[in-house]
Amino acid sequence: MPLNMGQTDPTTFKQVASLQNMIQMGTGSADLGNAERATAGGMSMAQSASIKRQKRTLMNFQNTFLIPMINKSIHRKVQFDVERYPVVDYKFVPYSTMGIMAKELEMTQMVQVLQTVPKDSPAYNVILLSMIQNSSIHNRDQIAQQLMQGQQPNPQQQQMQQVGIQLEMGKAEAEIKKLNAQAEEEIAKAIKWRAEAAEKQPTEADNYEKILKLKKDEASIAEAQSRITNRNVETARTSPEVDHLRSETALNMANARKIARETFINTNVQ
Image (cartoon, rainbow, N blue to C red):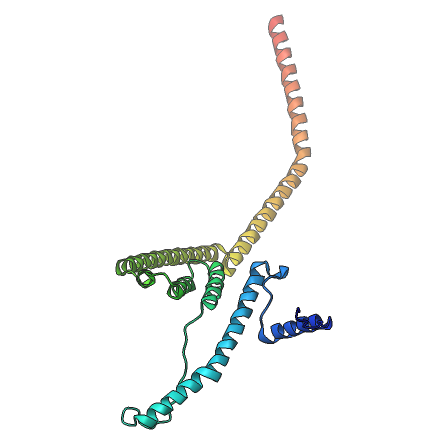
C-alpha cells in the first residue's frame, strides 16, 4: 500500500513566503533572480547584502564554535602540559582574510572610484596601487613595486623643474624691474610736465606788469587821440585863412596877367 502523508495546508505556502521575506529582511540577503537586480547598482546591492549575510554567519561560527573550541583546547593543553603551556589568561582573536565575493565587490567599488578621480590627481596612483595589492595575480608585488618606483620623483627631473622654476622667477623679476623702471620714468615725466606747467603759468608780478603795459598803451592811445583832435581843431581854424590866401593868390595872378598883357600890347604898339 502506498503511504499516505496527509494533505498540506494551503496556508503553509503563504507562511513559508512570509518567513522567507522576514529572513531576507533580518539577514540582509536578497533574491538575485529579481528583475530589479539586473542593473549594475542592483547587483552591487545584492552582493553587499550577500557579503553582509556571510559575515554574520562567519561571526556566528566564530563566536559559537571556533573560539570556544580553541579555548577548550588550550585549557586541555594547560591541564596536561603545564611546563610548555603555563597558566595564563589566554585571549584568542580570530583573523581571516577577505572572501572572494567581498574582494570582488571592493574591487568593483574601487574601479568606480578610480573612474571619478582625474589621472593627474595624487589619489589616482594610491587607488591603483591598492587595487593591485588587493588583486590575486601572481606578479602583483612586481607591479606594485614598479608603480611605487614610478611615483618616486626623478632627481634629474626635479633638478630640471627647479631650474625651470628659477628661470621663470628670474623672468618674472626682470619683468617686474622693467615695469618699475617704466613707472619711475612716467613719474619723472609727470613731475617734469608739472614743473613746466608751473613755469608757464603767469604769476602776480607778470599780471601786474601786463596791467601796467595796458595802462601805458591806453595812455598812449589817449594822447594820440588828443593830438588828432588838436590837429583837427587847428585845421578847422586855419581853413578860412587858407581860403583867403587862395583868393588873394588868384587875384594877384589875375593882376599879374593883366599887367603882362598891357605891357605886351604897349610894346607892340610902339
